[in-house]
Image 1 (cartoon, rainbow, N blue to C red):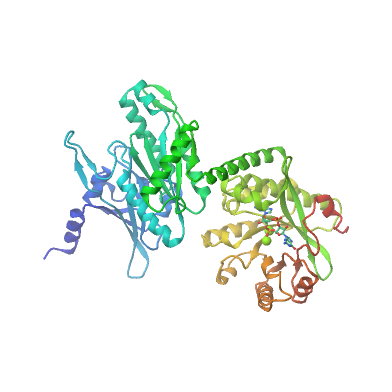
Image 2: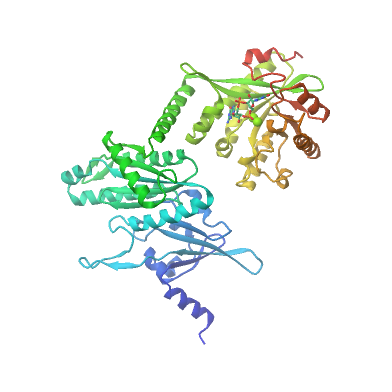
Length: 553
Ligand code: C2E
Ligand code: MG
Ligand code: MG
């Protein structure tokens, strides 16, 4: 009978997959022979080291931390890890947390899936089957397999996939001018850059000589535009070949499952033909297979450009909508609502540009401007002798998660000399549920500054009531949907009443939005709603008009 430990070691070492066991914090406890072979490190020297070092700098930071999260086993199709010789390699990784007797995830098992090796008859070199020998990227057969797998997942989850096929523009010129060795070196670097810009759920592959592909699961068409733009930018940077700076560009064709094709072959055909259009149009750009997508992508790009200019040119303005206390009919607060006064297109409402601003990240700059403008405005009204009111500002998800949110709020308050208690941030439930603990910490930090914190559109998200008591908020805003027909729908009325009751119980201020009719006001007033915002009292107004609604102290 072989000792358990010896047996375990024998089994590990006989396994072709590279296996690593770490503790809770990610420090390596043991690795098998295959792991040593794959990474080029001596297995004995790896023990005790932080396993993250193998993944750091060549993957997203967030990804490295995510690896050691507990939960169900996770499979990542293309992870980059460092080889002892300094190069990065791409492979599939499976992470599993192992629970101890107490039910705690005390160890982690990382398995890097083995791929069979094949020996080249001519050179005698061995290479992984399914991987391109030059770049180490998966080849067409693996890509086909992963696309097939992702189509199955997408079908179940009712999601989409984008297949981007990219060809280098004028690659033969480089081969002719600098020789094949330089050409090969460039292809390797292109592969490295590609592997670096994609997410862990994506697969990058080399199709043939100068053609590459990226498969990415998407939730909106714009996600594929973001990937295409990242790839174009990554390739734009100069390559250093034979002491020269060389510039190349990509033409990218994009097809979408399920709209353009049902299987890999269809999608590949579509992407290739879209890529040809991109090339014919001069290269260095992307094209969708479906022509209406191109128009949409173009509009989106144009909008993004105009938005940047609008911020610089001061085309954004804030409107203010009163929040009225029904008992006294006095204005107690205002919500700042952004408008875009475009010199050509006229007034544009936030519903049209905020979503694009969020996707492109421009929302952070726009949000900073909104916060400052609103603080200065409410302070100006105080200084002009009006009874102080509370100013609410909408904060988008990206803004709320940004590391410098607090600094920006502090700076806006300091520069405008506004007391923090007159500023309230409006956030939505959906921003809080991904990472509840992190969100609570951020909310608390905002509250520690002395600002109010309100949950906007309450009741439309999917937050669990059990969390509500833990959120350090000051205000709930009942969504318009629950106010709209309180007068003739007993169910809606009951929900509105319940939200008001809940706020009372949790000692929160409750504001109703979207009150348009006298019946709405009567209902909300009778049920003890603190403030009401809606067209019944006023639409959002320009600052000088809003001012006339304020009372002097
Ligand atoms: P929200 O924060 O829920 O704002 C309330 C929206 O309801 C506003 O639309 C307001 O005009 C509208 N509204 C108010 N009373 C009534 C009413 O009685 N009836 C009806 N039918 N509508 C009413 P708006 O100004 O178009 O803003 C839409 C959304 O855009 C806002 O929803 C908010 O999510 C976003 N938003 C607006 N300004 C900003 C901003 O500065 N930053 C960010 N991140 N988002 C903003
Ligand atoms: Mg709001
Ligand atoms: Mg709202």
